[in-house]
Image (spheres, helix red, strand yellow):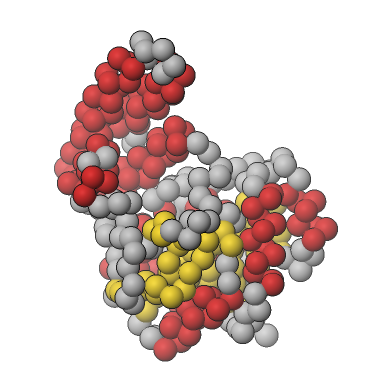
Length: 302
């Protein structure tokens, strides 16, 4: 018989965290039946050997190279049959009670297409709860970091303690109803990484399904283990521009590109001054190159 829940993890050179994640999945005793698929995007750190030796019950899909999070996640989804699909980052520590609660909520609310829980840092502080769909003003506050002056973790809602209908939830831990995916489609593979989860949930909401945040369903997420913030910045902004182009139209996309390019140019000037200061040259160089990448992205992304 098909399991109630199918768990999809994408791996790329993160062996130690993947091991911890899988151990937590099998040790916490979920009430609902589940299976796990790990899609490996060409890891070279021995992840495949670790999986074969320690978790022979896990189904492995092996890619020769890094195909991106969206495409790899879709491979995993298509290889499963569970009534619900959990997209889970491999740098998480989880508990079965949280996933059972998420399954129960979906069982009891047939028009809810997806749910997520409270994501915690390893020290127990709240990392992220949920987000609203993007606006230009919000993107300006993010790019300039002015939003963090008024709300910690901006734009994510932090410390939310009530069950809430939301716009979208991070794919670090996102449970989606299989019937919902059958209706709206899988992740858009044009997003290499970042933006794909917001795009999916935008389509889910537009199709009339609801998305809920469950504060009592908690996981620990280490976060940011695959790359540093400098290469991540370009990929994050690429996802934002693709989202605007797909859902908000040409004018809004042009305005977003222009705003991001101008803010990045100003940042380059500031970091150019910092480059002249002792002890700041290395980080200033990385910031200058990173912001230059964003300007180039805003000019050439089709």
